[in-house]
Image (cartoon, rainbow, N blue to C red; front, top):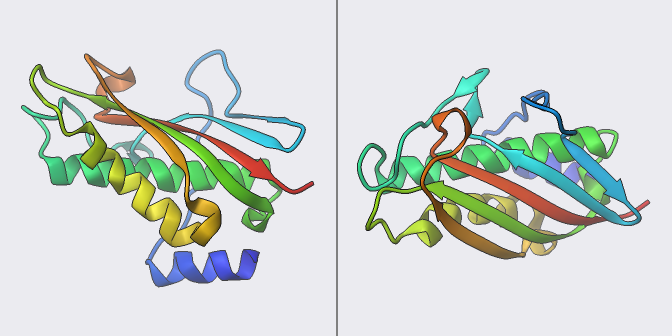
Amino acid sequence: MSDIIEARLSAAGITLPEAAAPAANYVPFVVSGNLLYLSGQLPIEGGKIAVTGLLGTDVSLEDGQRAAKLCAVNILAQAKAALGGDLGRITRVIKLNGFVASAPGFVEQHLVINGASNLIAEILGDAGKHARAAVGMAALPLNAAVEIDAIMEIRA
């Protein structure tokens, strides 16, 4: 299964980055039983936040979706680190929680987080189909436009 996932990443033109180190007093992931909890991932690309500001004023819907996709790439990078390099151990993405820095009146958070949901489903197939939340926030760490965390079921 890991080979299939790697092939899907390659076909999508995605090379997973090194998993980002925590920016504060927390761990990037926790494994408890057959569950993998991934801390919130920001739209980091090339070592910096790629999309900053508020959706609805500073950031277009398309750029917000790109930010969400970058968060998903970083979720997969963290999962790969947590699972010793074997994304094939993911049996199900249970839930994504998407947080969107939103200007007052912006109500398309669900469309922004589709950027992540679509990528996770594309790369992981049926195991990537998940429940989710898409929530508007006044601000996010480091002025990021989007932050997403994840809960996954894994094989031992």
